[in-house]
Image 1 (spheres, helix red, strand yellow):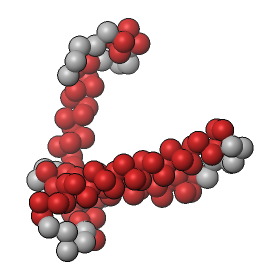
Image 2 (cartoon, rainbow, N blue to C red):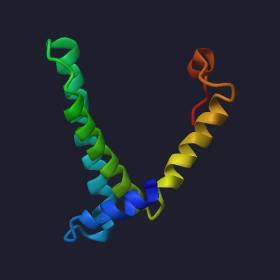
Image 3 (spheres, rainbow, N blue to C red):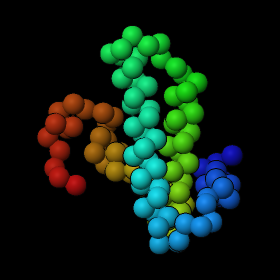
Length: 109
């Protein structure tokens, strides 16, 4: 499955009662919520003595992927377009791979 196929199938599970103009808003709220759940797992692992629950982390990251697909849909673009634009931006910023100095001295984008 490629990311656009994922997006298409994932959106068959989108709540049909969400007005079209609110799809992006719902997606962004969902991204924040699911990212929060993922970082909470890491916080518990790093600072509260919990073992890292890899299976739960995988599930939370899957939820992040779902909301990212919803955000792309809300914007009317393919998920692959968002991913490619991100790679293009990063390759322009780090043409030879990650560089700490370039990271610290980059211009506002």
